[in-house]
Figure 1 (cartoon, rainbow, N blue to C red):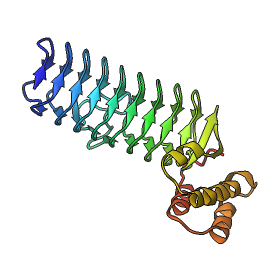
Figure 2 (figure 1 turned 135 degrees about the vertical axis):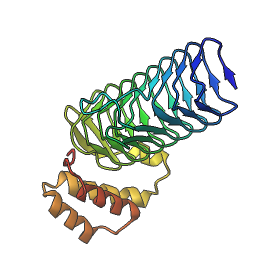
Figure 3 (figure 1 turned 90 degrees about the horizontal axis):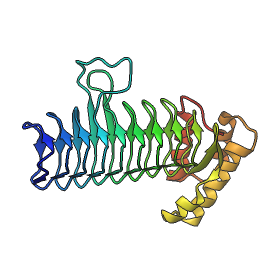
Amino acid sequence: MSIHSTAVVHPKTDIAKDVVIGPYTVIGEDVILASEVKIGSHCVIEGRTSIGKGCEVFTGAVIGSIPQDKKFKKDEKTYLEIGEYNIIREYVTMNPGTGDGGKTKIGDHNLFMAYSHVAHDCVVGDHCTLANVGTLAGHVTLEDYVVIGGLTAIHQFVRLGRFSIVGGCSKVVQDIPPFSTCDGHPARVYGLNLVGLKRSGFKPDTVRLLKQAFKILFFSQLTKTKAVEEIKSQISSTPEIEHLLHFVQTSQRGLCS
């Protein structure tokens, strides 16, 4: 264990033997730091926060402070659970959930660039990227492999489907479909995330079927209900098509379109 002499670490903190903690960092009583975690200088990690194996937290990050939520009560027991091998860059902020037992949950292998924010009760999957000043409001859900551009704000309760990408400076107030490229103020669908799908090894036949489904969903002038029926009748079923349709049919806020 390597803890800088100027760091303030509560004696009851649960810290693995090989954790590194930088100068002037403060670690609270209920924090859990797993093996290979590295904490930079001038960070604050508090609350019921657990940080998984191999995560790296850079200068000035504030992790686990109480939610920025007027409903939050000081005696609530809430949690922030961070998975493994996440990179949390300078001055990132992450809050726990709201309401007794409330939890903000972050998966594995994510990149949170400088000044990005994860609010209370968010759920972030694996392999996601939030560029600088990307902002998630409360109860936002990111599926796996989501990319959010810099200075983009995501409204409360919005879902972002897997392998979607949102351009910088966008305003997202409705659900972002899986596999899509979205941009704008407010954001709208421009088509498939072709570059992301190619880089992730999607087969050409899968991309072709998704293109057909997107054409029906977003560029045919059909209602979403009619579009879903058309896709089911015209396009071969694959796991990706089924995931897209399930996402569309379970949307509560409506889709960016």
